[in-house]
Length: 314
Image (cartoon, rainbow, N blue to C red; front, top):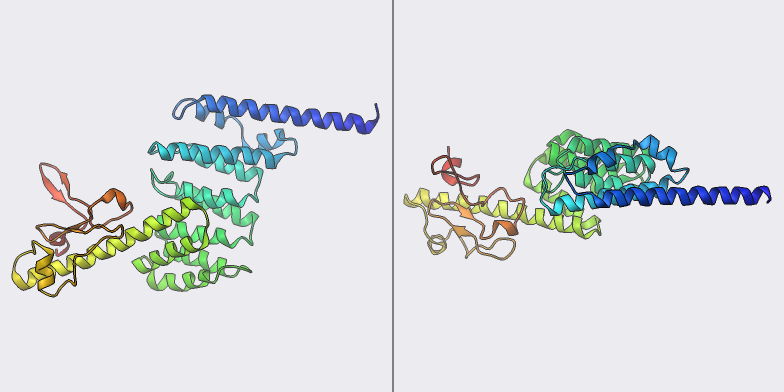
């Protein structure tokens, strides 16, 4: 047997051993259930150990761990879980094995940052993940957008959000809206128009269905919040003029305070309550809203609402 033949056989045997090892590991993981010993199995290997065991096939192992991260998040999200303990470790292992796997940074940050059940509620680890991605991929302007997005929505740190957008705007080929976001951030930090710009930018620059659907839901929520704020201001004006709250849209229309019956972003009429509040007809159809929610009964019948006009006057 020649030297080249021996080398080929040795390399082939190593590759087979690697694939068998990966298959066995995944089979063990598949047999486990969330909340049981899955954590023990996936915490055993460190990124450095896995990289050494990959025998040069880091890309293959990165794909394996990225697949597990997506499956892990998808399963927990679908079940309404409030803990995603393994998500960050899985993503960190994935990106250690392949620092240029951009999808793991972009989608991983979207998995990590939002509060449960929409995410793991770990914005700090999401920031570290994206910053690591930027160091490994300094020309990937989308990562700067993701970083600014996290700082704006999850950390409410508008200065750092503006800095991230500004850094990204300097990258060759960056979308022009990066500069616009950076310029607008300081002036409109935290306001509804800035949030609308960010979600619209997300909708316009991604083809992923899940991210697009999420952006649409947030844009609808912003519209509903804005509508309810305006409608409750109208109800207060009616109360100021007449001394009592309106009990129908017809009264507001007759008083020329409304042009017609108002509809929410999913096409259902808003509900006018006896105390001048407005509620959406179906809160489940408008996740992420902060206004127009039904009253919560707390402590011996006391009622509270984020959108209670009577409370907001104090």
